[in-house]
Image (cartoon, rainbow, N blue to C red; front, side, top):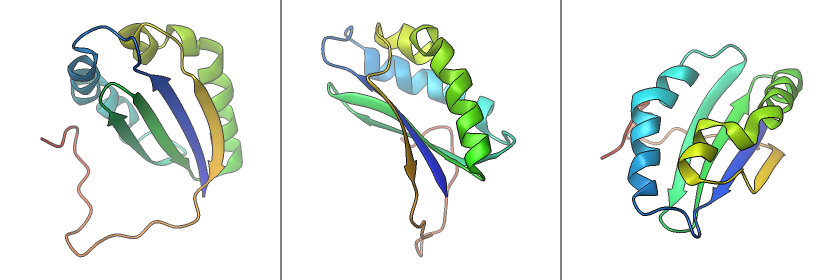
Length: 113
């Protein structure tokens, strides 16, 4: 599968940035990507005080490349960049080798609290 990683550094980011990012994902971003054409799934990951990232998996190289091209044009002004206070430090295509669903089942949710 055709992955894309977008990562922001949280070093030097404003106090409360982690909660602001989690709120943005819960209230806005999750709905924006749910059902998005060409996207298999998106995962939002964060290490408090270190980094925040979106990990996208697309159905085809064309879908990934189109999204990457469009996103890269506006990355510095994207909502994530506005919340963090800086542009992404990484926008990198990758290959997803496999995905396994565990015995507890897959849970798509706008927040895991």
